[in-house]
Image 1 (tube, rainbow, N blue to C red):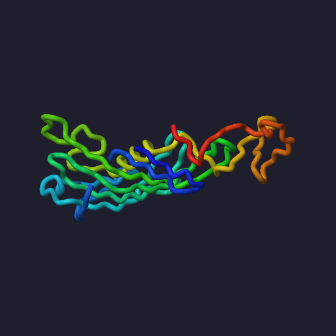
Image 2 (image 1 turned 60 degrees about the horizontal axis):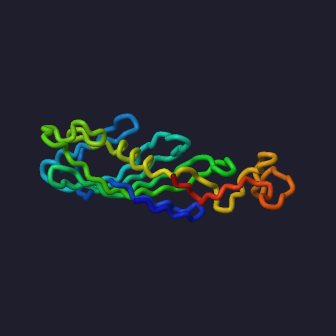
Image 3 (image 1 turned 90 degrees about the vertical axis):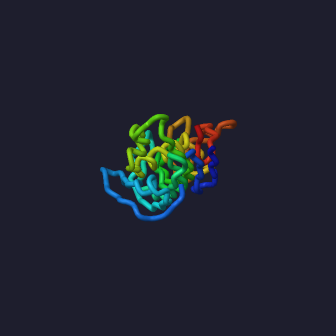
Length: 198
């Protein structure tokens, strides 16, 4: 389920199918990832809370200039793990109307359950987020962020895009000085909200 707040430079909220907390886990770095040993959760059932900042690699035309902030709660459910929380990150890309750079915040609500495959002796041996008792926070963040990205960004709802005649920006301060023509006003006719969904 997705729900984007279309407000200009607002926060875009997305719910992504993706637990519940306590402290005390082993952490270690693995490249840009943060890997957490959740063995105590799986054995004792004691919930865990995580508050981590992790890098998100570029994806398609989007970049992430700052680390994503992930606040996650984990709890054991039967033989699986339920993960709930929030991931926040700044997304940078080109405005799809005027091609100017734009940065906007993205908030992803995480609500995910990982269940072991039937008959598996090692519950998460084949899972790229959970491998044995190791929980790859960075990979989870990457997956939920990239799945929540919009089709494209726009710099603001009033962006007039590029002139179809000269190819320059029609926005105030832009370089286009072409006379407006009735019907198209000399600008590209793109009707996109502040964030374009797929």
